[in-house]
Length: 467
Image (spheres, rainbow, N blue to C red):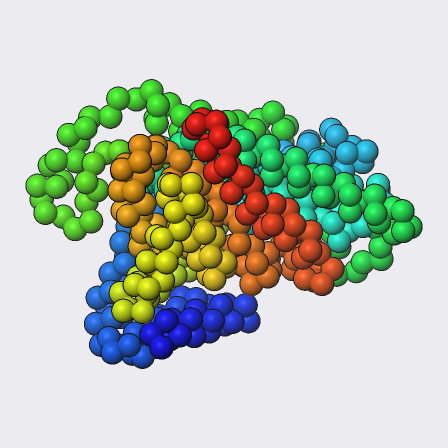
């Protein structure tokens, strides 16, 4: 009966999220519903447990959400993101239309641009290219999803996306963790995803299906000759990657730098530099990327406060993202405190396939990401609840924490892209298409293939011993 209460709460949260209701409002509602059904006091559950865990998450990751959103908005408003997308699409041409759209997404997201900005930047060029090549428009969301929602979000070592940053806070690793395993999964996901999309293109061509007649959100044909040079546009992306690498791997941080702050008895101070090194490095890198993007594209910002509008819009946008995820984390911790959750946790920890915690972790992160419809939210809940157990298990069998980091990151990008996922809904809305028309391709490249390659990556390590 206790487990049924949790399942009911999860089902209601998933349903309301799918219907478009904000999890900021309804995550605490359904968390407290589950708590009240199992005899936990409602008000302390909200103010002390739910809010306490939500605030802890905000303290840890808000700088990354804030600076990432500002960087993406500046890259968008200065035309730098569009310049890069346009150069890739035009350079490869209509003969490689699918590959060009995927690569545009990969380059931008690996450089630190948020996937939502990528959707808006790439879509107009994808439409023009697919129309010219007479490829069905319904394939565009799958191409953008493969480029922006998969390997540069979770797999490729060094990606500055939040889904690759979160595990470092729990395992004391860096965003370059388990590079061989990450690259192996990346090649598999990209190769299988491109093969699927090419199969769908050929299938449509054989049936005589072309671009189609579309009127909803069709972009106007514009002259893009005034875009900044793509070589300059790439500099902020390169700055983020290079500076992040230098600050992570080449700068000798003082291991005692936190001691004076720990002595102040401040709340939520990190236990060691290694737990926050990845976040510090990314903060510095993103600040440098923002400054460089503004310097390069300042003249292209609208006159009369264009810079202020871009910075403010990015900052405000980050609040919704961080509050959504923090609410999901607060929800997960209320659920974890309930007696009924012990049976669920014991079951997940009892998954001992391969003798390591990797399968247990992959299953848990995938399921929670699917329930919440959020890669970062589902992974944060899973790691907040069980990272210590997985890490202790890994240490007992001599497994590198880097593998825990990489598998958690890959798994977060699996079931998160179910139909109620916010990024999926946004992508389809921007493209003027429906779930019925285009979700199958999104599911194949961003869900099924990603989930499968996550477990194949675990098998790859088991067979080769490579990290």
